[in-house]
Length: 203
Figure (tube, rainbow, N blue to C red):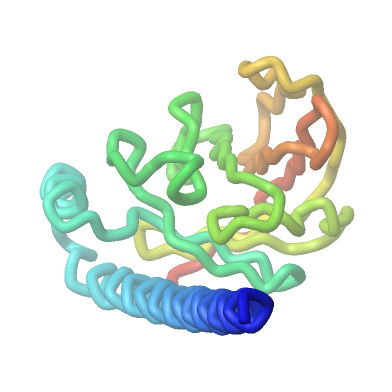
């Protein structure tokens, strides 16, 4: 009789574990679907607002971005199927644990000899947006949509640096560049991808 009760308990426990597992899987799928849909909507809003704000001054645009938490720019890397919005530097959402982060040392591509520096996690989490940038090679293209202009960059260099909390990078003083940084999994190193501007045009 006791063995029969134990067997029933194990069956119930197994059933509960299966239900929990199924619920977890369904929740993750729903959450991923919701996040993807939200991202697409925010990118759409970005392009719609770009047309409306074409003639507004920079102060009004920044204030609007702060108020509504809309995107400042979009990064697109076709080779790794990445298209993601970027927030203004002082936004609470401009955080490597939440999004692709624009580092405070950055200068936007509208400036002369600019260096837009972006950081994101690698790994397997939902927020690991740079998990595949190690696949990028010289000549691969990266696009930044910003201020009604699409900036096309070509990868020219890829190297590793020690992970010290402060990224020391090679300097580029006479070109507009885009720098991507992420951690190299299971090491104390970071991967740095450098690309140079090759074209810019209105979108």
